Image 1: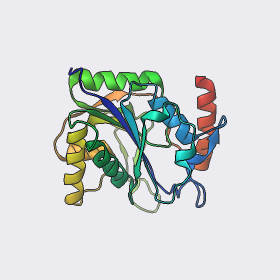
Image 2: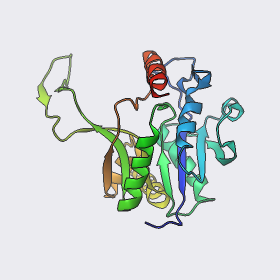
Image 3: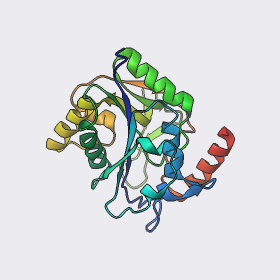
Length: 232
């Protein structure tokens, strides 16, 4: 492990959150007197980060007013049309202040419940193996393939399936190059690992926890509230 490499975080926070609400952004909903985004960034700041880049919307005048911990380590850049574009913009920003061999954690703005232990395990696993890594959990439920009209075609084996979470961790230069190549070839990128997979970059899974939920719908907010209360 190269001790001189630094660890950075990227949080794409420019999404419209249309599945949550047509008018309200999920990352700015409040839990325990703090926004979801504050909880998320503060969890990341439990690590020894060199800095954290938030990719925010052009009309977002709120993010910079929030009371983040370690606010001196925060950087802001303009987000993009889709999540992947926001991540790439943040990586381009980072490329001006970080080394290509530095590690980057990309984490969803609406995942405030990731535990410090999971974050530490992910970072240690990636650095020890010198390999990209993501948090993920084995699929527990029975999966059905339903191609049309809500009719089950068949049961899908879950034996080898894992549900991807974030953070997802890779070297800055490797991840930036992978996303740029995938976008140039019009590949659909749903997470950082999918871009890395496209360029044949090995990615390992580090088992996370089921309470690392992503707030997508309005009822997820109450679940996140309960999880954070239980974790305190």
